[in-house]
Image (cartoon, rainbow, N blue to C red):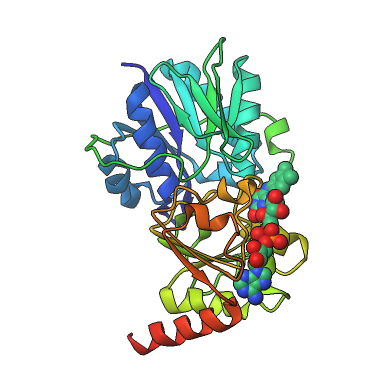
Length: 314
Ligand code: FAD
């Protein structure tokens, strides 16, 4: 069975959930082979094996000293050497660039923001806010596919995770853009948006850049904070927290929408959440069509009461 290369996403040596999703997907296509760059592979191997990685290719940490290009050179080299069936990466801004560069090197094609892939490599995209599904296939060479986080449920399956050291002779071009400093993002105690089990999002109904009503409820639940595009465009909350078609896709156990109308572009990023709770003063708001529980009321009254009640029970 041909190998399917999966570029591992990790933070401080911890494998991100999206990688477990990609490994699950890779098993459908061929034999999953994780590609790890830098230190810490030994500690991560158990997790990669748990989701079916048969191989773990470990590349030198030096590749992380440069921006994007070395990863593409590594993936293209490995794809050739191992006769890979496909390359899967997460559809983050950086990895989409890696994917594009890799496909150019391989003379193949790239598909981005994919939500599913069949065993014969037909990729599915969800467009127009999830109302239309399109299918696409790379017809030449090794397809490079960037998959949106939270699109595929991760399912464990034991793999051997046999480690192999790999390296690549970086071109001068790949070394042209060097990372001079890494600054850790201040994220406080909140979980990462796309990885969180609970997400509390605020929309235009919050009414101002004082998002504390949303943050307080999130913190009482140990949740991540999200925002609608209306809130982001108003400058009330940073862009990286936007949920939806042009933001992040989330699929938590619980999604609480505060003052969000439920436009299709917002739904596209959260409609697969297990349980959806909407707090909206308009009983006709479209969000109620997909919510499991609806509270018709002013979020500035409902959310603080809910927060207080949850904090009391801790
Ligand atoms: P509104 O639609 O204005 O809704 C506010 C809601 O709050 C209303 O339902 C109102 O009843 C309720 N409300 C007001 N005050 C209160 C209160 N005190 N208490 C309780 N409820 C209250 N949107 C996204 O979110 N994410 C995307 O990724 C995204 N991508 C887009 C891409 C494109 C190409 C386009 C065209 C649009 C996109 N949008 C996206 C925008 C989307 O169409 C909506 O405009 C946006 O989602 C609306 O945000 P909202 O629900 O916060 O605001």
